[in-house]
Image (tube, rainbow, N blue to C red; front, side):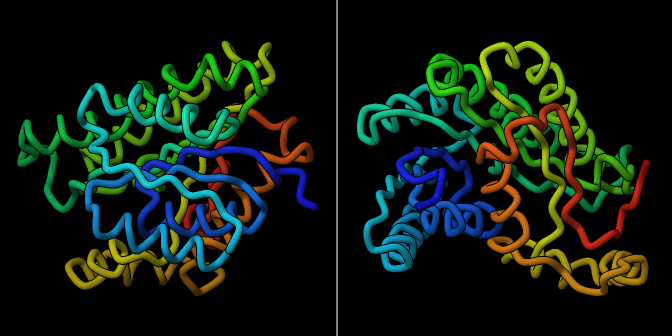
Length: 254
């Protein structure tokens, strides 16, 4: 039996892409999951998929927009009420505003990126804290190579992702005494969003692939989900404040 059996996780943006991959990995380990998203149809489909994948899975699907300030408190409250506790928080949901230079970024681009990203991440972390103190919980926030590598035309998205990394390191120091670990994953895995971006910006993808030592895009469940499983297990609970690049070596850095 997995060491994670009976644990409870919230995965924002868990109805598709990277979030759904993480949810798949967790339900296979016996973790009850709350998945959030803005599209009710996508949430319903993801819930059916997860319950089919793991017939005894407990899956709570909550329609929520991370930009709404009350969303975090509501999602955490419903999770604890219906699933009994909270052990793991995955901050994955994020609007993807890219493709323009700094001088052309609109206020809406910037505020939407930050409200759905670092501000929502902070709100979910704070709302989850009392419960994670009780369980010595795990927080995993999604960063991006767009931030660590300062990719052009990602001013709103990339700078927001770097803010998430800074917030995560501070939380790791402040909350470590409670047994809470806080880490960041920078993923480069296939998803509907990555396929759309590849179609719209083939030149950027071509450059990335030229510099990708492993020569392939990763798998959300296997590569990101697998790491999320490890970081929540006892074996992974001595790592905190770290950033893990899950991107095939495309952004090797010190």
